[in-house]
Length: 249
Image (cartoon, rainbow, N blue to C red; front, side):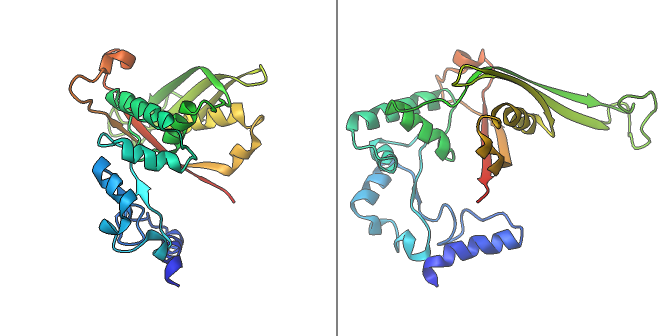
């Protein structure tokens, strides 16, 4: 039926092993997305002014994005989904989002990170662990095989990467007062950190076994003029990392 059109579309993508098209009409994740402050304000007053049909008609949902264009209307629309009714909390969230965006943070595609900002503004955030330190090392081996003195036949030249692996070390403090110090390898630094964090946290939070890393994207952030690049990064350009995951039923 039509109210399950979005569900059907995602089922077909899953069966065919296709990446869902966020921009697809009606069923795409961005089909009912709204960004600008005035845009979001108009949506709150008259949704039909920007949407030709309600999103639930086709089983989709409305999304209000957090970005450099965000105003109070955007934040109010988003915080209301977290049960926020206090205007002072809304102002605090908006101020924090704008402060962090000046440092290179982006919340447009990071709903979970935005939820943490809201939770902290409401003063009901309880950390599940505290990061003490972490370290990631990426090792590569060229034309000589790792652990031997023989040359790899597939090596094109001396710079050919025959083997590359990332190793992550994490040290965490847990709420009960204990510490976890673990190391793990992975195919890339994010996968290595994911594996190390799992080793450290799964004994305390076994439900993490149902959470799986599915994708991540990393890019250099271009700060707006006057952005404080050196405030947290020592002058180096900050990196924007978006991590996606799925949870088993």
